[in-house]
Every structure is written in C-alpha cells, then in structure tokens.
Length: 110
Length: 90
Image (cartoon, rainbow over all chains, first blue to last red; front, side, top):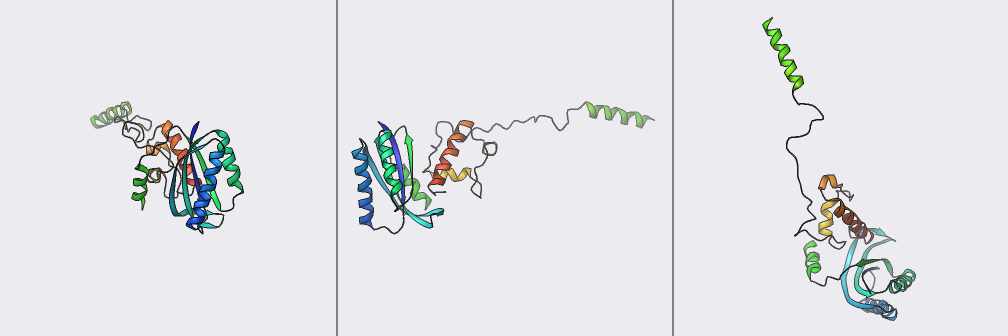
C-alpha cells in the first residue's frame, strides 16, 4: 500500500449538498478499488492565481488516501470525464503528516 | 633623476602586488543552505508562504546561486513550486 495526497479543484458554483455527493462519489471509487480514505479536507473557495478554463475561482478539496497504483488509475479515469472539476493533482508521499500544522499555515496566509 | 628612479621602483612594486581582476577574495562568503539542517522548514507544495520566498516578483524560480540553497534542496523546491503552479496556488 502506498500513501497518496490528492487535490481537487471544482467549479465555484457548487452547493454544499453537491459537494458532499461529489466527494462521496470519489470516496466510493477509492474504496471499490482496494483503497482507503484517511482524511478529507475542505480548503474552501479560493482565488485561482491564473485563469483556468475560464474560471477565476475554485473550491479546493484535499484527500489523503492509501492505495495501490490501480486505485489512482481508476480515480483519475473517472475524474477526467467529470465536467465539474477544473483540475486535480495526485502526489505520492512516504508518510502522511496528520498534524494541525497545515491549518496554522493557512490561517497565516490570509 | 632621483624622482624618476623612485617612480620606476614604485611601478615594479605595483606589478608585483596581487591586485588583479581574477584575484580571489580574501574573505570567503560561506552562507549555508537555509533549507537543510535540523530546524529547517519542510518543503511542500502546500506551504505557499515558504515557496514565495524563492520566487521573483514575476513568479519565476530564483537561481540557487542567489538564494544559496543546496543542489538537492533546489531540486525539491523547483518540483514543489511546479506542483503549486499546477494547482494555481502561486
């Protein structure tokens, strides 16, 4: 099992309910393909530093998961089709750091 | 006449002295890498505050000869900057 960090950017016109269903959908895909969701973070609405596909703002979601290479393959296959998503990124990490340090850093930015 | 002789002597001395364009500086600038060491901050694509220190005003990556980051850390840094760019964080 490998550790991955996955970040999604969705379009800004998204309800809370829609966001929940979206995340649940991808969580179920991960779980189906022998994966395990450890943590889901909602970074909220942010300004994009440059325009992507005519979008100026986006809602960020950050998922920390464990899984095989196949898990990521299936996850990204589903995301490529999805039109609500602007962009996504998967990063392989050696170990998940589940401290609250990241939150403090975010607070300092704004 | 005496003056002339003195002048010649001075000139010789000047040529023998070590002043030249390609001369090495007596004082060495030994700046250590700010990102390696025990209490160094961890390079991560989510830590935008740190990454912004190593970008120019126009958003280009600064060379390591300016920032004196070690080669290994510079490689890590550039990779995480590019990840942050992809996510439109920087």
